[in-house]
Length: 320
Image (tube, rainbow, N blue to C red):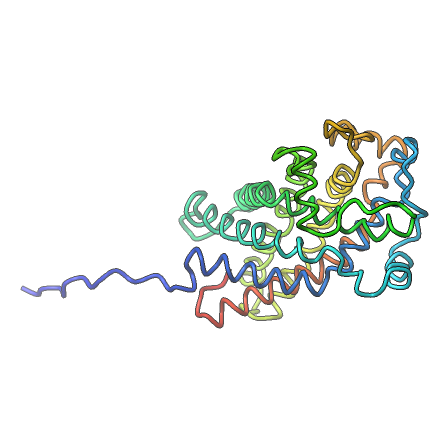
């Protein structure tokens, strides 16, 4: 009688595939991408506020609309080149929360909750649900840092318009928001923020994951830099197309002045902002700032996914 050898100890999961290692790698990769592309985010925010007709009707001027290139050059000329990185600190704080949560949540939903088909295939509809859910959860947690970032980004413009500064830094912005609206005030604009994040991550995570799997399955390409570039290019375009309208609404809700009770003076809600934007500026008003959004998301997505995959590979983790 032949005796089979006793089963060995269960295979140990590589530390690089662990929850915390994935979280840290996500934050590092996102920070690299944010530092390189942040000026485009600042330009996008200024563009979305400029020409805001609903605010002008309340006597709140945001200055002339100048377009993407002129806006960026104007910031550098009028405020100084370093001001193109105004608000980078809360932006990095945001990614410490947002990027870590969105990646580990998506992976856990994909691998442990939704589950792949018996043949190893992960349906796009499951990927879409996982991507939108991961983005919404991550953005809700990180919404206060996004609010602080938007308010700091607009301080340079207020100074040029001769208006007194509202905040003097991330710490002061946090204290001011907390004093005026309480803990609830830290989540002002969180609804359009979460909606935007769900759409963006449905575009980014789902598209990257699906595009990469399609390339590996239907071409002779391997899991290398070129594959990552192709997948991230698709992800950036889809994410920008799906997320820009919600991004415009989010920015305007967060930027609007409030009364003593913390209620917005221009928009009652995100739906009200959406309606007024379309009524006053047309449907394309929802895509104001699309070019810098897309131009930013493309290199951001490329830098993030290349950094993320490369660091994971260096540490010995499996591919995303």
